[in-house]
Length: 301
Image (cartoon, rainbow, N blue to C red; front, side):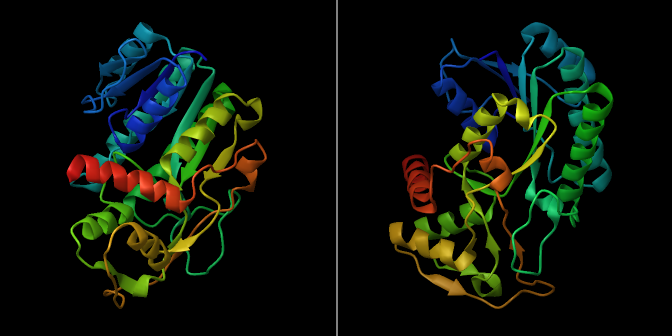
């Protein structure tokens, strides 16, 4: 497989994607502002410090490494104001698309998010044809990135595939997701607090299954120009997921009423489109949680 360039290589998903492909014997270049604390073999991994909002810096990196595959994960979140978040995210994505276009990359994966669908009030799965309806800044910025990518597909015929990930978890999970919050509570032997009585429902996806989906897409011409939901293909309520955690860690579950302006939501996908390419999830929530908990206990005590 040709050289793979991964943006956001020091983040949660980025470190796992890097590890996955290095374990396959592939060479990976990571672009990020800071190097990961996770160490990788030097003969297979090169870290390149890069401000992705700066077009010249991005083009210098592409000139130096000339990647054939690009996995674009980097994204700005939690800026102080809407303007900064939208501006930085648009610069990052446009710089990556333009550099990839000029250097004729063979595949470009854009990591989007299930948040483009919005939070559903009806207990039914979403599919790739559903109309996007993002609510927050993050979901709207992700949809904006998708629209940019679609324009490059149409006008420049770039070989782009868009992934919409759901509740992704696994080793190196440092972001304050629902999974990390529940595990932090359970490890401290504190009650796992679930609002809306734990009725929220989503697809908890182990990160290696996301990496596996990327591997399939990078080697399948049918994936070009398509959007794919990526998930386990089985939905769990927060309460059901917390019950699985309690099988590994002796923590109680505390079911609480909704907070002000909070309502139960449902956000889980059909993954039949991805399955048509040969994808089949390899990790159920039991194995995924076992691996994640083992990592947390090893690194955080």
